Length: 160
Image 1 (cartoon, rainbow, N blue to C red):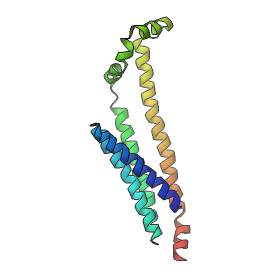
Image 2: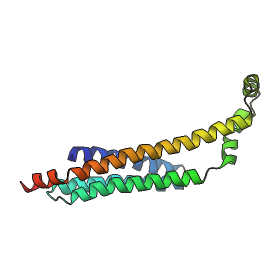
Image 3: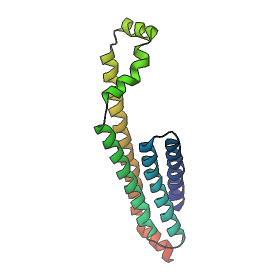
């Protein structure tokens, strides 16, 4: 179980910490903050693993808390993104495609309109964030449950 915590916490810390740095480098304040908050969950998990290694069963509290904190952070971010959908940003994203005569001819040939493309982008946008929320609920919820169910075994191992 400690190996799982070290791998999971280390992965989250390194990956999201790196993404936070890259986001900050490019001036994406929101991405930097979210990456830093998520990286913090990895640090919490590593702290819990360290406490268990030191023979302190309270490390499991840190492991469970790291997963719940990460889940809350991800769900908050997803909720914020779902509530802040900007159709004009999507229109700007499509502008290079829509103003390309060759692309426009292909869209016209198959009967795809700008409204169709915007509706498809909107669907992908909402679906992708819902998938992230569902995946996080399953993974982080499962990890929290995994750690929680190991309390007695870890306490017994540390006592013996």
